[in-house]
Length: 389
Ligand SMILES: *[C@@H]1O[C@H](CO)[C@@H](O)[C@H](O)[C@H]1NC(C)=O
Ligand SMILES: *[C@@H]1O[C@H](CO)[C@@H](O)[C@H](O)[C@H]1NC(C)=O
Ligand SMILES: *[C@@H]1O[C@H](CO)[C@@H](O)[C@H](O)[C@H]1NC(C)=O
Ligand SMILES: *[C@@H]1O[C@H](CO)[C@@H](O)[C@H](O)[C@H]1NC(C)=O
Ligand SMILES: *[C@@H]1O[C@H](CO)[C@@H](O)[C@H](O)[C@H]1NC(C)=O
Image (cartoon, rainbow, N blue to C red):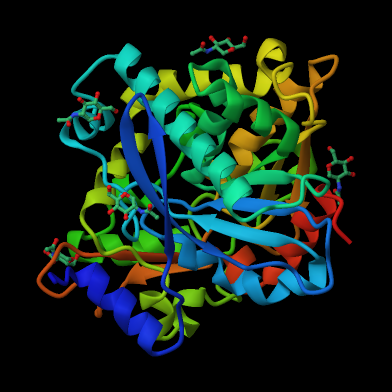
């Protein structure tokens, strides 16, 4: 058996008790079979008709990022199933055609088809796992996408308007109650950077050797913004995290990092999602999946979708969420709710791990604070949305 570095780390994580080996599940679409691996919190003790949330992780961090929610599943009467996206933790990697599309070597039509296919594959996984795990239909299911997972949660919504297997469609229509987006960056919503915005990756005053470190500090920082109710771009602190609140990076152990990081090279191509050539495709996906009433009509059990975001997160989450709020307020029946998570940021912490960088490209480590430092806060909100206890 060949041990890739990621496999080795998973085995190490399992052996030291900090992780469970993910299970795998296959889906088939157009005669093509794709494997997804997943982790499951199990039936919440003492509950029969509990709701379930399928969780879709972000960039470079796999399902393990959410493991801190698992011990809370019983308290909140909510089951959690963390799905590893393509290329993470043994889920089927993108093939060469798909990598080309992701990296922009093809057309807008191809990119749209790519997202549609990913949406169908995820929808088939949600449907298949709902049956396999015998999730109670009374409780229903929701799908939550964090950060780059936004793209995939939206694609999941759009899958209803595709040539997906019709029996699966009907089952999903009966089971899905909500799609929840957690801390979406502007690029994932197809919104270009506004003029005058700051990003450490393009800051010429940061020396090359410091770039990674400062970038991840920024990404993992807690920002002290001004009055967010003004929705004024100028009140957002773009550059400097609050020095009073230490990034989780500084408090995490090496084992913590190993338990959540994907070290396989495959998923790195997803960095391209932040490139300008993806904006149109993703803006169109937002238009269809969130704002198109015809698509919504295909999801009869979804009363409302949600966007959750932290009040201490990066400007490039808060600002696009305001844009989404403006659009929502202009609609008669928007059926999109917003919740501000107090004290939460996007990534609590991130950094280059000495454990994972050996002999390979540098691996960046990011942790979502809402999951990592305040798992209860996130759990309360998600459980409330789904009508759990
Ligand atoms: C999924 O498909 C792969 C590849 O065809 C196969 O090796 C694996 O056993 C299948 N897994 C399950 C759970 O059926
Ligand atoms: C990759 O998968 C796509 C389906 O998404 C398929 O159309 C294509 O032929 C595959 N390419 C290769 C090189 O296997
Ligand atoms: C914040 O801004 C809102 C909207 O402009 C305003 O109504 C409110 O009074 C402000 N709050 C504070 C504490 O300044
Ligand atoms: C999305 O919808 C908005 C509002 O209707 C429109 O201005 C924009 O051009 C649309 N974007 C795409 C890519 O279709
Ligand atoms: C890793 O990062 C360091 C510091 O930024 C850089 O000097 C080095 O070249 C990087 N290594 C690789 C393989 O990218």
